[in-house]
Figure 1: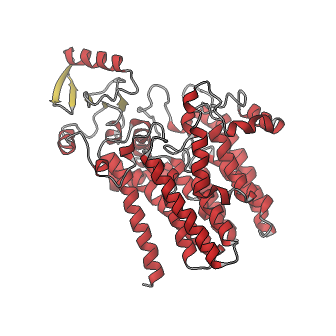
Figure 2: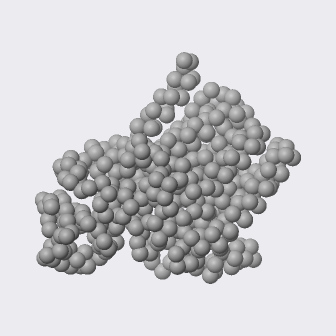
Figure 3: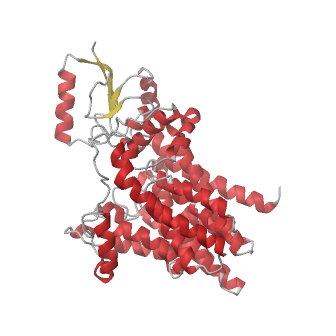
Length: 485
């Protein structure tokens, strides 16, 4: 085995270990949640048993997960549960990110034959704060989709258009809005990369048009059809732009200068979020955005992500936290190293690449150390601290007590317990109880969501006093109630 391959494997092993220490440790220590790992785990359980998903975790708001997000990629990934149980799709998500980094390596190797550049590109992708943050919050199909983007660029560069089409379809299968993401990527290459031959340009045009068609077909027809109540697509949260997707596109095209300022300023009435967008822009600029976004090939793709983030009514999507920046990771890395590789003097190219990598690592570290990622507890992401591996729960004892619950029993569980019991037909998020045979809670940890504290305590007290439930386990960490027959 040559030294280059050994070095490549070493990098993958190091970052695979880091990613596992973030994602898998969080799950083990009850830092994953009903929304979203519990949702995806139950859907994966049904898919892996060749069943149509009736998602009780989301009960009563959503019945079929595909009516909420068209994440078809979860179907093949679901079989990982046979090997890794409730950790299965988390493992697959980590593998997907590692494959994405490997895609950056091979793409940059095509662009720049100098030995060090592909390794730097792969490390840069892994170190972007959006990657760490996404892995620190449960599982999401768009993480898998974003990780496939470097391979799409790679196969287009290699003029392997069948392979690029397969990758494109994999990206689209991850989530309905990734179809528009792919369209933006394809348009960027189609309009601004003149080196692509005519066959490839036709392929890009067809993929672009298919992406638009796929998105609108899913959100207008198939997803509402799959909803048991026929509810329209409920993820249009852009009141700034209009009432629906059609009016949003129309307003942006007709009045671009009116809306462009909202990429940078707070459009809510809450001054608390005045700096959220500025912080995001600063970190992205320092992580390679300055170099990558001056190239229209990548700016076109990034612009779609930025519009989707910054115009959203949900302020959480503006920032760096959770999974909402992962789609930028491949664009920033590929764009940066494409730009740096154009520098003719080798020492200038190396110095620039290393400088951007160092700044990216520092920016990520700073983001993990400081409170600039709202809604994300530091101990979920700070894999380099002892606190990340510690818990206030007696974890091993809790897992032992979990064994008393039958494998197929219906359960209502607390928000951070649900993912561990989601591999069954019926798992509800407390305080939803329905026909649950067991209720499993951490009553002293102050995690009341999705209920309010008062409602949570009232329901719990009623259950304890009821003669319909008996205590199977009660200690300082855990309460297990069993329905009396």
